[in-house]
Amino acid sequence: MNTTTDARIDWNAELRSQLEWHWTNQLRPRLAGLTDEEYFWEPVSGCWNIRPRGESTAPIAVGGGHTR
Image 1 (cartoon, one colour):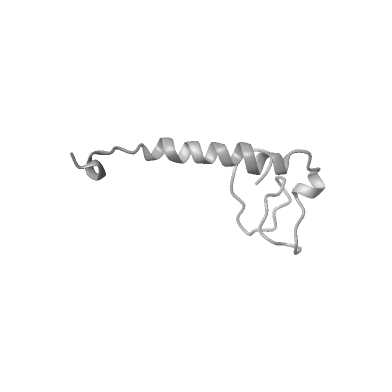
Image 2 (cartoon, rainbow, N blue to C red):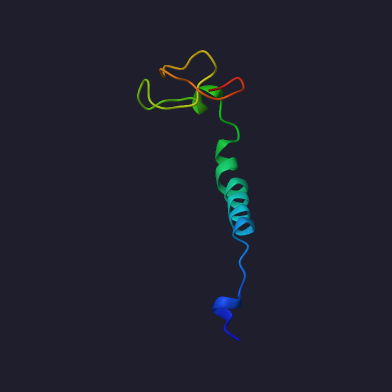
């Protein structure tokens, strides 16, 4: 039996598991408690960012919801 060719990896499950772990243990805790001012802070005026609808400076703004 050749284990290198017989092993089946569910790549979708592996990726989902890793993304969930990083969201739960690294990213989400760092975002918790941020104010809007901190979340929308820009290191340089006009840099790429997520902005509330109607405040985009891009020639073409895309996306749905209250932010673009």
